[in-house]
Amino acid sequence: MPHRSILHVGEIERHFDETQRFFIMNTMDDEAVNTVMLRLPSTLSAYSGGKSQLLLQAATVEQLLHELENQHRQVWEHLCTEHGHVRNHVQIFVNNELITGDDGLKTLLKPGQEVIVLPSAMDA
Image 1 (cartoon, helix red, strand yellow):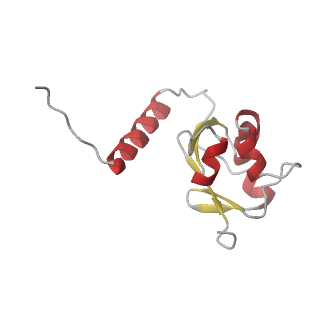
Image 2 (cartoon, rainbow, N blue to C red):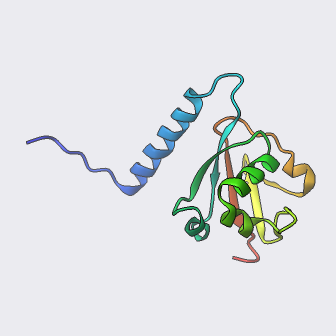
């Protein structure tokens, strides 16, 4: 009888995250565009094909939002206004720091970096 191991949900998620990071970091060369992980609240996964994590290519937060508009328009519409501004109730974090204003949109992203989107605490 073959040996089977059982993984708990947390272990599966951790393994999935490590596998994605390994893939991202090992498929990029010096001239490649940055591939970053956008983490969405579960409330938006219905608009991204059930995914709460999206891999997108971008060098800045602004480019990330542009790629999101192109690839997952419904998610983008929940995060941004029709003029492309981040909605007031949306918070974007890079390196656990809140990104605000136009200067925040110019924040540089590194390959494999995570960008986290959350509703503001006042709206939660």
